[in-house]
Length: 283
Image 1 (tube, rainbow, N blue to C red):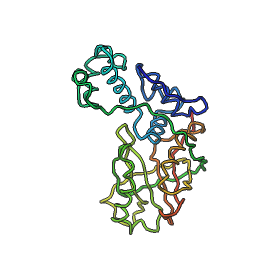
Image 2: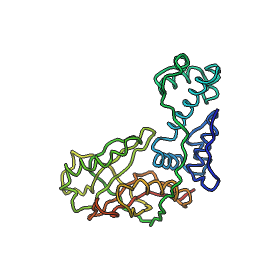
Image 3: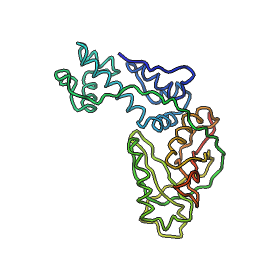
Image 4: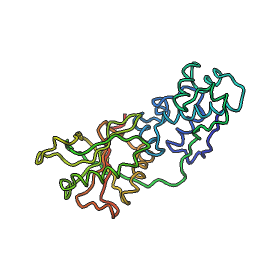
């Protein structure tokens, strides 16, 4: 039923191996915690690495792959719906039918009666063959910092709109931020996305009651300088969580992750920004 992705042993990075496990286990119970344990990383680590590289949450991808294979089976075979449900990792006809309808907007029985209807099927994902940028951090202990700014909830599919939030905030309160270090803080991660704040240090010198707030806790941070243009910063984030973190002697901490923009940051030029990840010793 499942097509196994072609991935050579040498190219099986963290996510390539995870994709391989998903493709070979679509008819078995799969969970974020179980897949993370297979790789010896935390669920948070795997979730972040997966979403940054592939633009969707891990379990949403698993669900889409299962239901897409199920739709093909319903279309191409005479298997009973309950048989398709069990082969897709569901334990009941009702649960499978509900999930199928929620995902595709049509029940399995209705789809079988109209097999020519077009459904947005999820194909198996493959890791790109391009090399990740090499990233090497320095480690810094930072004091607690309270930020003020404007925050917005983003899904993994809409995170490309973050630059528009920056434009909006700079147009609104750029006079406060100009000449100071600024932050792009990511926090409150979940399967539905994350919160991103464009902010500055709330040092009490101005009234920030009308703005949003978040606190960056004191602790140890891995600091990665982004050398390229700001438009390519996703590559640095991906390299951190897919390439560097699996081999590191630390794990991601629980506080917000953030981009720190230098006082003289110029979006027309490369550099001037670092990615900061709270870290704790790996246990």
